[in-house]
Length: 570
Ligand code: FES
Ligand code: MG
Image (cartoon, rainbow, N blue to C red):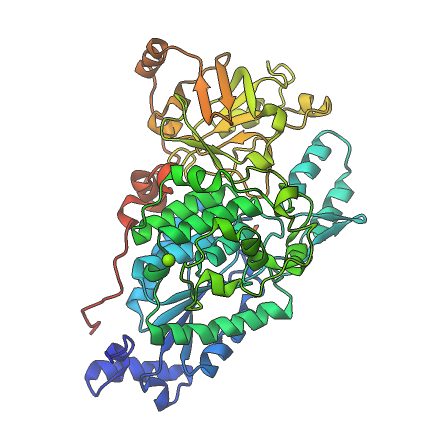
């Protein structure tokens, strides 16, 4: 057997080995900790600014116990924690930064394998991207969702009901006191959002990709089974090190195709599109935006969870979780795909059962027969744009309307509630300069709230188009990720109020009814917007970020750089 990676630090009688061992003894480690047993890094994204991870100090102890039980040495380390609810201008801006932190922390330190503690939206892709670029054995444990929200006798979902509540306050039908009570009732336990938002989606994606143990996605954060799967994850990573089972063996095209299909079946977040593209880029798997349509198009959405449906993650757990969903759509999956269990998907889901066909519906009672993500093309988005049909209004899926253009998010905020704004429910709201470079960080502002005067008339959905993303907990007929974005001179930049825009989801078409000549004229007078900040990480980000159809990764981070570090530190 070849020498373990960690033994290049801890083995032998040299000066450097003395340094590495001696200082590590500050942790209370006995001599035999360095005898060649697998050293397991545990990448902890705990932060009090990431409230979805408030329980990670306890959860990590279960992982450590599992590692010890299997004969490994667990060593916990912190990395940048991308908390969705607080980070400005948007957590997405920092996904790539966190991935760099993860990659360098893994590569630079004496570990043989790594457990990735993910939860809140961007934490999952950032950890997986970084680990994939190192390609040491890696396994994900998710923090798990919060318990279902309950308010005034009914269930409420993270995020999803926020938009309803805030629109109700704006429309004058909800009091400030009820608003505050709803806040407390929505987040009533540790855990991440319990709707099928981006956190639950990405936890499901890592399970579908084969990067987490079966059942990882759905156990609530406070369920003892969350602690148990953390423990099993700790045990399993030690075996994975011994088997040299690495992300590059798991993350192939079949794994991504499976994940895209599962995303369709669960009505997952549109954010999964950019995250999976970015992860694929790190391992060199050939995945394109069009693969989202190709693999996901005909997958029925069978999971009846908010924002597309009625239930919440706790219900999903009791119904059987991702293994039960994968079993329902087994004929659409590549069952031979390898996973972190060392076994195939077929093996992992063999005993899965659906315990609640209300939550995980049979195929013939699907929420929508065509779930997934539709990839739109046209002169408004030559490199593509996306829409989540299961979150959209059927009546608006084919629509022609007059554009009402907002030049950027400030322009939108300044004018949206202006009683004089020339807009009605047939209008198409267009928001510019909210893409990767424009915002910067491609914020979740694409599901623009509707004008107050239309809300008061009872209008609840309109066609909206932007280069932004939207929260996975949001809903509406919202066209997102238009590429190239307005800030780099994509056609979106050229739309003017009054132009006619045509959306036809069935035909996958997004068209601006303006002649090529006129667009060329407008392009002459277009000037790029001033960047919000120069220098620093934001400056680096704006200079190097790829467009949405490439996963909005930084160009120089694409690919795997392996885990070799030939030089000693002293
Ligand atoms: Fe953390 Fe929703 S804010 S998962
Ligand atoms: Mg495979």
